[in-house]
Length: 114
Image 1 (cartoon, rainbow, N blue to C red):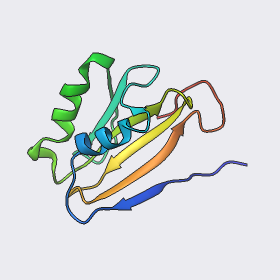
Image 2: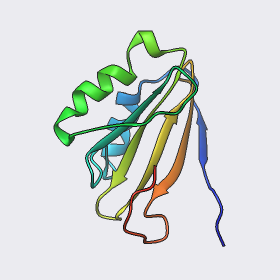
Image 3: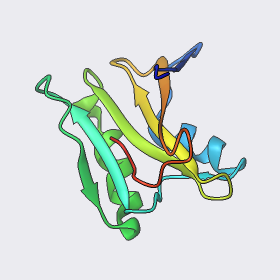
Image 4: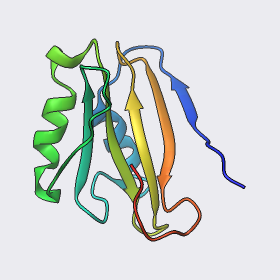
């Protein structure tokens, strides 16, 4: 049986991707997934995910948190290495609404799915 699951969060005020990632880091989550770092700026409606090397985390956060992108949905993949699982963290336009969609090794598969 397959299905999708997601978790939606609404914040009292706008947040940055950096702030959410830092908060999750305390629980073992990271931008670094097995194949590097994946991110999205959905400024064209195409959900065109980009990938880069793990040492580019600061640059990725600068891009997704840029004031130029506040009106667009942005996202990063986050990964919990101890659990071997992760997913897409999406922040909606305005940055007061966030969704997490588990997509990496949800059922123990070995291939990341973006």
